[in-house]
Length: 108
Length: 108
DNA sequence: TTTCGCTACTTTGCAATACAATATAGTTAC
DNA sequence: GTAACTATATTGTATTGCAAAGTAGCGAAA
Image 1: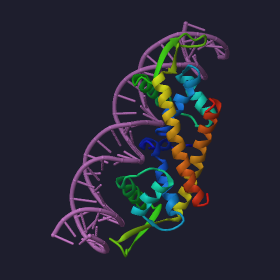
Image 2: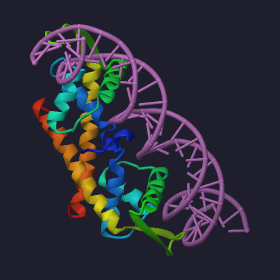
Image 3: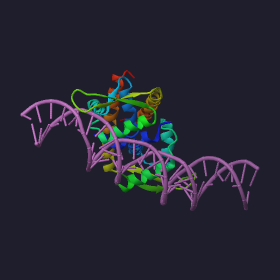
Image 4: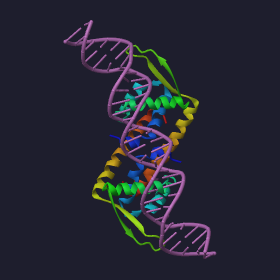
């Protein structure tokens, strides 16, 4: 299990990454994240985060009917969101680079 | 600059990693972290974190005189701390693994 | 036809933590 | 004697993942 504190700041970027290629809805995102190995990410985590992305103009959404259940709210990145995703990737690499150098030095 | 939210959960593990090899004092830790590329980590971040490690039995500390300034409080990992460090490393690799798979798939 | 299971979204409130700000104080060099 | 660097501690704040609870559509088994 990845501790929740360690997901802070990273999860938002990861969700932006998920919706960056094709419109995706919340429920599907939680399943994809589990597939990638993030563990079960609570819906109470994903939905508020999506609403926040939308509110901040990083994503926009549209409802589409589903053939197997309630309608789905598909999210996709705005241009501003694409830029934010690029910034996240840069920061993420900065972090993993720093941690990598540290672990290297202590022989881990 | 690595956003502070992204450091949450990771920084504690990194500081454990720093003091795992040799006793280190707070001020020195902030400098080492900067050297590794974490950016300037505020003292208001490091000291409370060290006190927390100590309080939770993950680290112990002793004061030693300095030849160039005030006395220093050297921190070192306890056995419990070593175990916690190992757990952190496992979680960290779980996270980077998951993010890696995600970024792979979206072609980043 | 009712109930269970899966799908799907929203809201409220809490807990953890990095950090800014502030305070304190020893040492050295000008 | 005062500025600059070294060194630790405390208080309060903002962010954010998540638990919990609620709403609701659909299909299949009972």
